[in-house]
Length: 232
Image 1 (cartoon, one colour):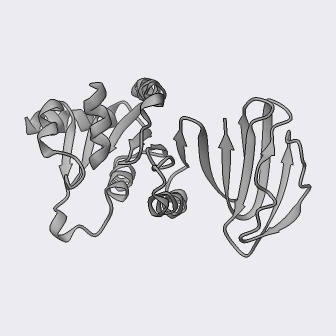
Image 2: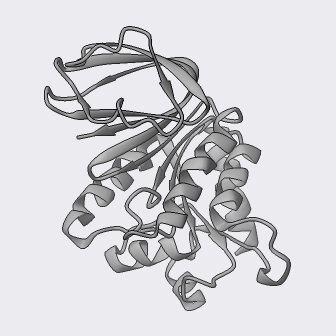
């Protein structure tokens, strides 16, 4: 069994998979299960599918397979692992674990050549604000280590930005929000209903929330550190 799991990892690296879909122990609303199942299906084509602890419940409920499972099994029933014998399982001892399961999952990705990561189960957390904020700051902690890292759920994406531009697509009327994460930032945009034109926003200011797409293609340029939230 161990040799088989080692061969799985060797196979990933051999085929140069540099993307990962990371499923955290967050909320996966039943009414939108199809979204996560479809995202999983798409990810299988070019990404390593990594599940952190309690995120395994969603995979078990829908009988879909991850590639890597990481956790200390304080959120998921360890007996579930019997259904995922083809996945590499990494157990973190709970007694002296210094990192969250999400951090362990992202660290595993970095240590295995992953350059781009999409995180699921970190946005819609059933009003668990501490987890939501923690996951947003987790994006910034790992931003410099990945070429690209975002969080996505069935109705929104969260993208960390620091002195850079972001270009995306959507439908006219979709909401775009910019949330300053330092004392002040400047923001310019193309394709939005309101063009801030390099306007300065301060930490905690809510003015740049809920702008809208005027076109199907848009770009936002940020000077400073901010979170871009795209609602679709």
